[in-house]
Amino acid sequence: MMAGAPTVSQPGFWTATAMIAAVVLSSTVGEVLTAAAMKSIGDLDDIRAQSGLKGAIRAVVTCPLFFAGVGFLALAFFALLFALNHLDLSLVAPASASLTLVTNAVAAKLFLHENVDRRRWTAAVCVCIGVYLLAH
View: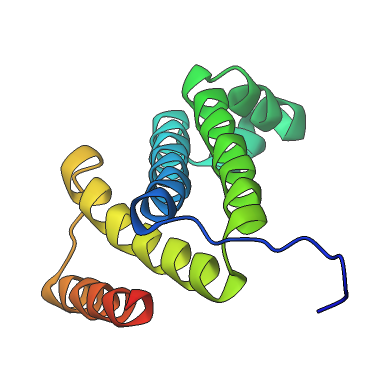
């Protein structure tokens, strides 16, 4: 370290957990809202076949759920930037990416009524174990 360079202290466990949780939750909400928007719009290929590309674009940009999803995804991006400013990349990137996978599976089952099979739940449990090992 250079002489006179400021030392940067790492946030405590709960602060780091809150930063990663902010990334994960805002990302999950954004992805669920965007998926719900696209399901409510319908097949864009069919819309494009009937109304052209402008019709397909109009279907997306006039859907409030789509913009809500994009807003939460933007929030997730800035939460990620904030977390990366205060925490190590080697913790933030794997923890936020893998926990988002888990929360997306739960949210897909609860809110989008998707079929999440045993293999996906097993993968989610393995991810949780991996994140626990990474954090300790």
